[in-house]
Length: 282
Image 1 (cartoon, rainbow, N blue to C red):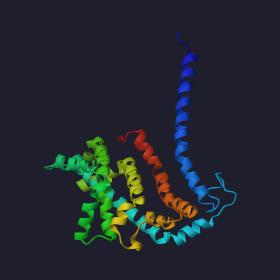
Image 2 (cartoon, rainbow, N blue to C red; image 1 turned 120 degrees about the vertical axis):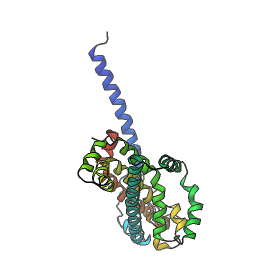
Image 3 (cartoon, rainbow, N blue to C red; image 1 turned 30 degrees about the vertical axis):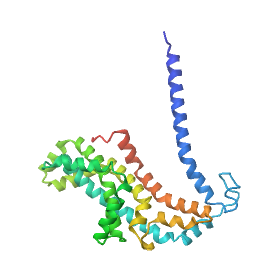
Image 4 (tube, rainbow, N blue to C red; image 1 turned 60 degrees about the vertical axis):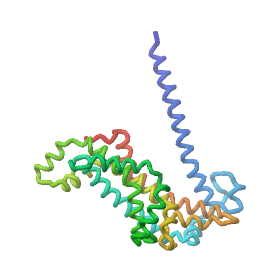
């Protein structure tokens, strides 16, 4: 008969192995970020010679040169504007659409929803040609508005799917109580559905903010004017045909990574709540 000590030993061993695995995954994810910050504080001559994570000399001027030479000021503001506008647009459109698919009864509801879901299977590069043609005919190419509309379209399908799944679990008694208090359908969406959907909205915000912030190829296709380019395009300033200025490139990448890390940290408690509770309404 197995003793209590055996079960305790087995539990400790399993927990140790799980924590070692998770620690290994965490280190593998964090190490590139640490190496990036370390490399951004070195010089072009020492970046390959000095392999330590802590440089012998800290060259903080790399951040200044990266900001000035890369034209990061204008492009940084562009990326913040594009990311904010796209995320707000996706939240408004996808939450309204998801609530309609979940609660309203109208002809073709399932068909339209399945069309949105089918769009998730189309890779983004596969839509570049029709987007280019459409924006050209609408005279929206090389405009911030055209780029924002394209990026909203890119994130809609996944966001609608996540939010509809949440709204399907939302108790109808909450809506009935709000309706008794005189709320319209729009009022229920605004005062009941959205506040309860904070965990899912946090996932939608982080997912789409990361997608817009890191977008590069679509921006090159839509924009011709350099002042309209997002931040990712400015990083190519440090990568030439014959030489790449790696310290400045690493400094630029660090500047680029900081805002999206900040957004994740601000949304972390809602994301964890959504994952651990399975986005169950309570």
